[in-house]
Length: 258
Image (tube, rainbow, N blue to C red; front, side):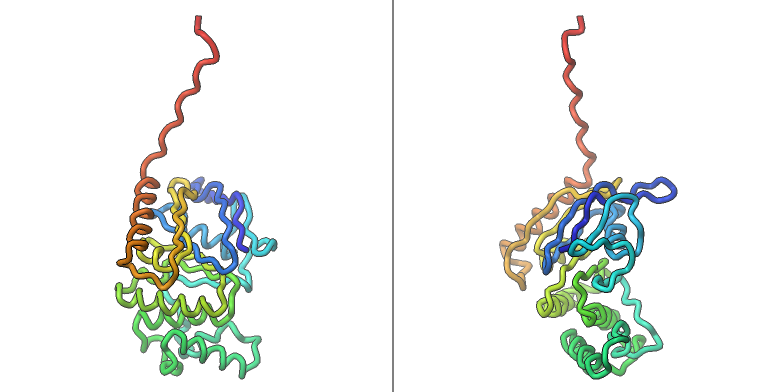
């Protein structure tokens, strides 16, 4: 279980990026973080990944605190970040240096098969399309069998067709080992397609605002009444999150002024 407790982040210049984040993500659950620009989604992901230090609060995995990069936590960035001097198979297996070579080869081959790139194992990253490069990045994240997988808008630069295709590959890999997944997205349809719940964030400072449950079985038809209703619910929550918070009513006087 991934537990985020009273997590806050204030930068050296005084900017408060996050305030009082409380979120529990069950083993095997997929949670989408969605919100307007500047609400701290990526900052939250970096804190969970151990790439940054919180100003207050804590992140833990099965009760153990995460304060630095953790071997049980994988991360997929917006861009693939592949190593140009390694071929596709080398990139996928890069984090498996301590695994015996036959097992490493088998795991890499299986991951590439699952993302539809088995025939490209010996190609160089520069020879792949953007969508293929991101498939390699996803395969690299899953091949290490992480307990938690963090995805920071990994499909935002791709066209709608490629994005939908990668959603299918991601869910196929997830179904094998069922890691806990936390995905940052601006795309409502992506949240509906992938997540068990969408958590809407409010900006300045970033904090959790509303949660929309997504209970229909996957794969989900985006044109189904359930998906359309879920998308409307998320859009309405996003609209509310971007409105100024209503001021609290003034306290009534304790007694007559006279």
